[in-house]
Length: 169
Image 1: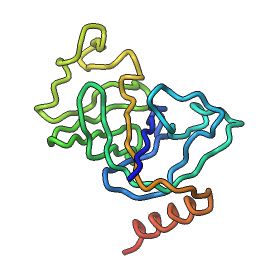
Image 2: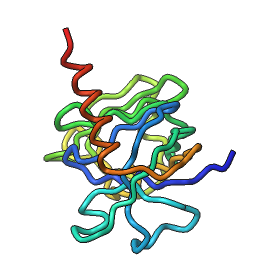
Image 3: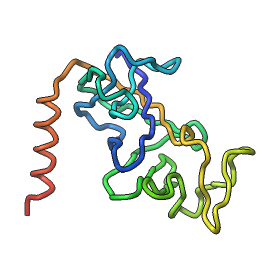
Image 4: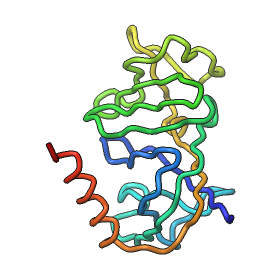
């Protein structure tokens, strides 16, 4: 089974896509004209990252793994809560951080999430909360399998079906 590596580059302001290991869905990626990081085959799309005039690339794929370079393997990235994201790690740890006013500030974390484990220059204190200076430190590497071409219409139909399911009594 061929696998592709995709960069999930954080864009903040609740504009990033949630991801879950095992999920099969249609995802939007930057088109072929966007320069990719080394060792990445695709990059998840947002207009701020790919540009307003960028060509979109829609693919149906299965999320095989999500990896944070410092903290390890994740089960899920939840971007559905307004103003914050939650990373849920495979080993049970989790961290929720602000994505609006104080981007990167840790709002809450499991007791075993060692934010002080990071290297020099990684973090700084603002008052009583911990924050990261370099936003790229929140970026994730995602491994995808069973990747096939898709379309905006398929992605929209999937989104509408999920929304209807959430609203159903």
